[in-house]
Image (cartoon, rainbow, N blue to C red; front, top):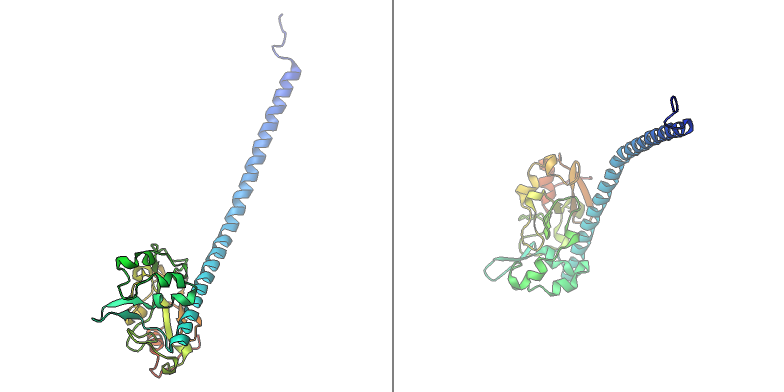
Length: 253
């Protein structure tokens, strides 16, 4: 059958049309995928920013809860808690973070702790292995059970090493007296440990890679306010904020 087509013309045309449609569909798919990629690229920074703002807000809420608990402790006992308790030989036993547990809806956990024995004694194992979200900054990359919320502890600070301090002794003004600060991860401690920040840590330079929040960190003041201080705050200002009764005039922030 000389000259006879191997395939009917209609079938060839149909096949070509299907190929053109498939080519068109693939092009459309690539266009849609490209649009999706562009949208994601545009939205991702906003999503990250929103996530960062929420984490910062959570950090503030944590610190506010801690500040209120410190005041409730003061109302009950007539003074802010000591930075830590000690045994008969003066060995540190428990942190102020443990002492204020009942005022943060953690009475059950507090009741499990033997205050006569060190925080890391096996008797207190269940407590010191309990994660406390309120002591965790969500922007800090920490091991479970650690905290970057440390009290400022010096001879002149609001929280004294082993003694309570009543508000009446904070003559510099509660709004001008620093109580608790965020420290870099390298200074993090187990939340039950009786370890805090001395003057060296408070006054040390704070490079950007040490900060949890861009540009600075949050601090609790003795009036329960939460203040954000720039990492470039002058050393002299920070030193004035440490003391409770030094006669300095600082702020507002």
